[in-house]
Length: 117
Image 1 (cartoon, rainbow, N blue to C red):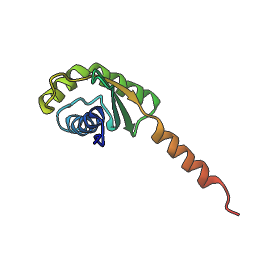
Image 2: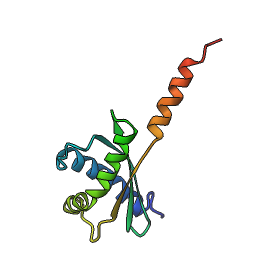
Image 3: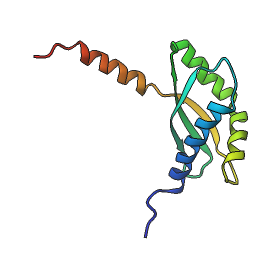
Image 4: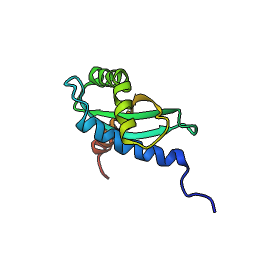
């Protein structure tokens, strides 16, 4: 019988939970905005993890700066993640800004402006 979820999917899910806790409790940098982990996509060989984040209450420059800061702090975050997860090798973390939240808010705004018939 085949497994319901592949190993990399299970690792992605656990990594998302642990990264959220790490950013919330362990990373204390005032330059970092209110960051939310939207999704973690791990390659099948678990070598690279693409972490998609949203930065709330920030302008475009602040979002870009927060994403760059996360990529700068990725070795520290990866070390904290290694302490929490029981894996032999921890994936390289690459942070990307996820603009789907902004797009959804823009669509909702446009739909609210359409007059109902």
